[in-house]
Amino acid sequence: MADLTIMGAGVFGLSLALVCAERGARVHVIEKRHIGAGSSGGLVGALAPHVPENWNAKKAFQFEALRMAEGFWARAATLSGIDPGYARLGRVQPVSEDALALARTRAGNAAELWEGFAKWQVLRAQDAPGLPIVSPSGWVIHDTLSARLHPRRAGTALAGAVQALGGKISFGDAQDGDGLTVWATGYEGLHDLSAVLGRPIGSGVKGQSILLRHASPDAAQIFADGLHIVPHADGTVAIGSTSERDFTDPGSVDAQCDTLVARARAVCPVLQDAPVIEAWAGVRPRAKSRAPLLGPWPGRDRHFVFNGGFKIGFAMAPVLAGCMADLVLEGRDTIPEGFGFGAV
Image 1 (cartoon, one colour):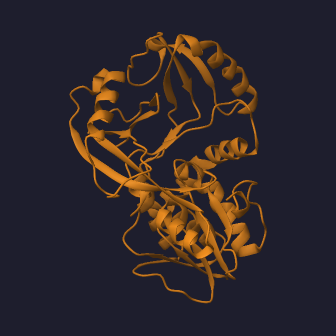
Image 2 (cartoon, helix red, strand yellow):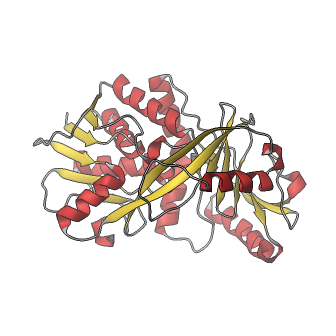
């Protein structure tokens, strides 16, 4: 049995801990604050695919991640007894008149590229599932591949699953030992890595989001002009997010949250009177290449990096955790091209 220390209890660190514990490793997760202290403790939880065109290895890899997500989160729920809020309920997007032809072409692409697992279709807005939305063209795109997850419950479920398999989770400063160590320490870790290596590896992008009280637990999520509207099973709807490269206070919220709410209510009028129950801000780790960053820590034996989830961390974590487990526990490199240090 391998002894493995994982620094960081966000979705990357905890997903890796679960996969490695399932493979028989003795796992110790060390988190300096609390479960999901970084961007993994947010509100939105949208797991959505790339558009089905210009297919490449990265898009195929993400498709595989979305396909395996249900089984992964079901295992976490079974082991922990905690519901992570996963449900593949699809997504609805308003589409403009100018984009209708392209949307229909993509429907044909999805029929082939998604291998019959899910659909991409163009519907009249009144025929779309879920919450009624405003579409100036009267048409929407509906895909059945998108899923939702409750970020905080997901983190708690992962932690419980790791502990159920005998893993240890502790809180405090990092412990620099001689064993196998994986650093999944978010945007602060990317800053530290950049300083150590003497070149820019990545940075943080702040996001603000809002939680409304409105019960539509079985509704599809909505994506409109960059805005996510995600109904959760607990009677809330999450709205997000801003994308801020320049910021001084990682955890502060401001008037941009009011703008998010106004935009959501314009797209989805049934939310007009839904009260705001929380505003949240956090910083997402963005590698220089924009893709997640996985691999051995350059020049540091038995140390590895698992970081850079940015906007797709929850969607990609299950499959990427498998790749990291292959590398750390078995010495097999199954990391997709473009996800390693060569890309940054």
